[in-house]
Length: 144
Length: 242
Image (cartoon, rainbow over all chains, first blue to last red; front, side, top):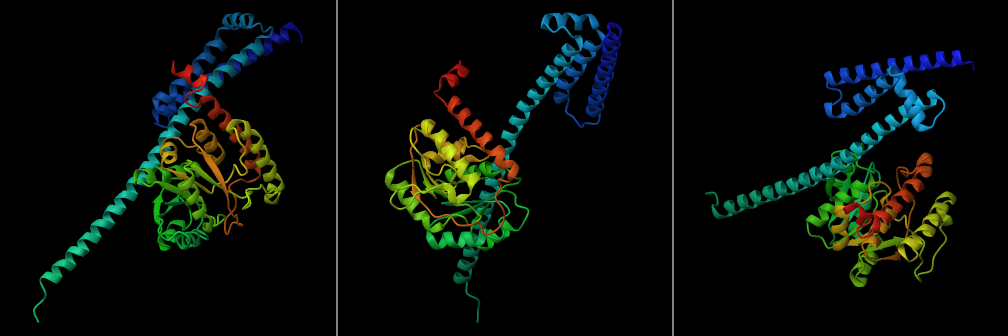
């Protein structure tokens, strides 16, 4: 590929990443405003979107990062960095989902156990009332 | 207590409860319903069992652990788990209970592959792929457990109060049988196997379908190694605490 073509394709990729990161940021902000995503869970995505936006707009930084990573091709370096950013976000969410699942299981088990105990208690109370009524009937027999 | 985890077992759960009652008439019977979509709860209630109804589907491990938690809180000394699909023969319950009481071990496994003399039968009769899986798990578990186990995937198990205490706090959530063995071993708890009979399920299908049968060994092996590495007392666990 000629140098000119390479630069043009790099520019296209950077433009695509700029548009994608702006879309991501817009989507996250809209979702937060509509309360589809809680603010604390939007932060990771906003940071990822901002990181990609900075990388796509600041070509000098990309080139420095490519040199630091030892990757000769700027495109590969950019895609690698994007991949790492998203892996980081996904890992953060996996941790959060695991914590939530543990809490959800404990909560469901506790609810079930409390319902069981409540039901048992209600049965016991009904039984006690029945016994009390029968005792009263025995103690005060109706006339005739 | 006899614990019967059930998920969509309306066709079998009532007869399992009745069979359990016939086999061990003085035992409390608890059906843990894992948020079934059919009439499992109604059928279990009709048969006279106590019901622990989970508010949403947790999977087998979460379902069994809920039962263990309740049994522990209610002060039961022994809990024997019998599957709600009718595959386990309740007539084997007394043998498991006797072993728990007399041998003093924390868990007793009802093994399909032991005969009365203690000799092993081949798992081939349970299907080629399943047999291969069981052979693999036997091979991997032997050095971890320090002894052989003939039926590591059996869900027909009895536990004493010490194991109940442990499992109330920590219990594997998916495909729990094999990981539970490792959890027990890491705490230096003892287990033994007694022969039991397995029957064909009366209704429903196994939860392990074609896709899951590929995922199952990977998941279980990972769970086993995580338990081996991270049990309290291991070097990695101690490093994490520093």
